Length: 171
Image 1 (spheres, rainbow, N blue to C red):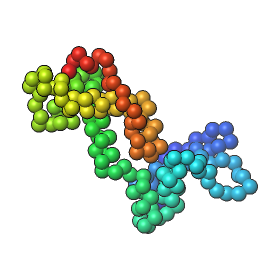
Image 2: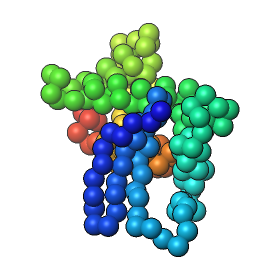
Image 3: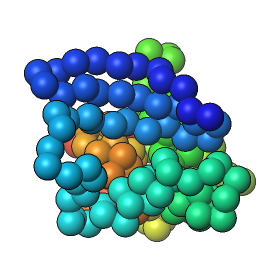
Image 4: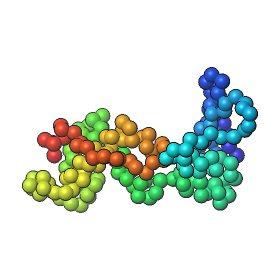
């Protein structure tokens, strides 16, 4: 059974948020047209939208609903990566005290158990560059990456950027 969480009017459209046991659906109800139906844009997210539409109509325990939920759930790898990026952002947050350096993030989160005692080992390490890429990706997610996440894109970052000029002297 689905329950109505939010209902709002915007012009002639009604916006609804329905909650089921495992999912939420956002619907826009437009004024009656010649035929009933759905408008699903034919873009790169079409398969995700169709899976959400299928989940809306199927019984929660049906095979189709279970398959639709699986299509809307991130893979174990993607889930792990998102958790790692959120942990990196937590460590970089100045509100939680002194922000961590790239070296501390590598030692605590991305490569736990590895020790970078000597500066030359750290500077020439591929772990350093990998951690810098993860820091850049985490920062990018705060500005635009959530759109990829909401659209169902498995592509979290399409390009490599420098994490931040101010971090280079702190690692």
